[in-house]
Image (tube, rainbow, N blue to C red; front, side):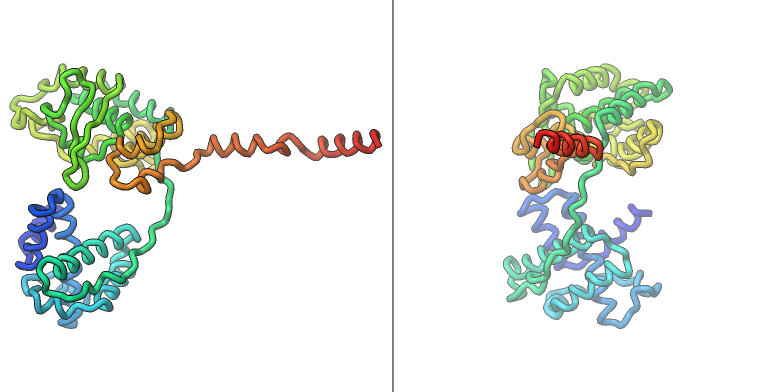
Length: 349
């Protein structure tokens, strides 16, 4: 159903929106995924604006039938800062959007209107420019402990009935050791891998390429997978793709997500609500806390554009906090010790 909705939105567009999307994709080199997110967010925004002007309730069936083909330069000129604020309130109160989701939508709106001001020169001022981005909670990233990570890997190895056990073990090993994004892992091709299996190339956010270096665990998992990569497949349709689906095509994001959820549940870890992205968090946290990796090196490993993004992994773990409290010079004092020390002092006096 989600794919059907995306297809419908892709077909329901306006020339103005399409020009903006082409500009982001072709001129600025944004990734197709990023452009698709712009499309979805802007479609939602313009549908709401059309409903406001036509007096259509967002709760009505008529709202779902609105198309945005009428959005042109004149329509855009009439959108005010208040209109944008009302849209954000609607997304929060009626659609239950999280702070992060509203921040993303506002970012898409700001970027669109900036384009209309600076590139198409339809507007003199960006009506979204002065709207503050919703503040996100500084929640610590969820991650698996070292023992939980070992348990997850062991669960994959113990699944003797799995047809693609070596593939799945290799995928999870790369997640836990290299901290790749889901899209990066699925996009790896055989031609991206160094002949000695010491490194591979991935394409991250914004179509930015980087080199990921492999440790012995990754090299061993890759060797084992490559030795049996073509087994159980009658027809390989995408021969250069590293990870293949049962149909011989490049493995999809959804297939990897389903596989990870399956093994998390089998390992008894599903209650933590982990996902493929949490395995990325796990790699980063373990490298920093247990491996002593410098935060600047971690930034490059994860492919972050800003150091501030990497710094969420520099939180102090519970073990470190416990050790810090135990080092307090008063840590060994209890009521008996205090009384004894006080008595000794009195006797000395």
